[in-house]
Length: 236
Length: 236
Image (cartoon, rainbow over all chains, first blue to last red; front, side, top):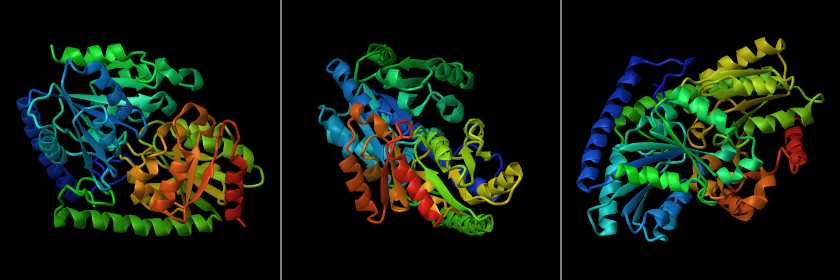
């Protein structure tokens, strides 16, 4: 484990004292226990919970806006937004008529299970009801650190947008290793970027052969039906 | 400070024990001392060192490729590349005839000063010389965690590319607060994205009134002259 962060792996060229490893181990163990509690809590609400992880600006909030249009009114959803600062993403989601609460970490680079537990309580209070089909948890924009922290989700989704480049699965393997679904977003931009779908798919599957992969563009609508079908399938 | 990471701030809604804060404080203090050592080391090489921080896929490596074309042969440069996995970025830079070494963190979300110290030694060995005008340090793709760690650089540069969105300075204020220069990259894509240069500039300057800002596209060349002039001015 990284000396200075809860990240999974020790830097190959770095060092680590047993002392700090013990501290992090106990923090991660506390997180794991709270995550199990969150999962039970979410199941009591009837919810399937999804943890969305990506770099800043990969289109998580835009995807949720368009997902709301496609899922409602057949399914009920709620959103827990994570950001370092600002309430903007929750405001965007609320404009779509979806209950949404904002968690601001005040500097920290990822959501953790205790913070999400507060988010679940605030979401129920804000929505004025205690059942949801889907609870989406939009993590802090960071392709690295959130992958270490179980939040109590049922499925984990990693997003990479076309402008970021197709080399991301090879460069950030731990994030892909622990994901259930890989969304390649902003595919309407493929004509303008040197992004190889074949490379992204191949290298992601090398890291995680069980990974499901969907290509989509929330703006053009391409692939959105596959994404919505994937979500609906979780409720069957 | 974040309990599970060396990040600067404690989550507003989180908790922190004095015990773990002490551990992190001592790690950051060790990093600070090594960073001072790196700065002296780099100055003995005659180098101005620049720490480039951004999300994955903001165009750091592409910018360095084009910077090499514009700076050489008048100035000498070397590059220390940081990534979690893969040697790809250093290979790209070496193809431009620039000495480059790759640091792989093996999972950790940022470079730290001890790792960069190894990078300086490896760069000198690889280049077969002990003087450089510029040493560029390309940090791990992450807009959050690298901002906490002084690497021994002389200037810190934060990049946001147009596809990421103009809300990033407000959402990631600590990174902008500690930067000297803000590069808005991939401006050739402005016609295709809802990116407000005015919003990005205004909110970045609210966080850091002394921040310099340059808009550029390495691909179209727009703004590259301003960036090269900014670099040359560091050597006057």
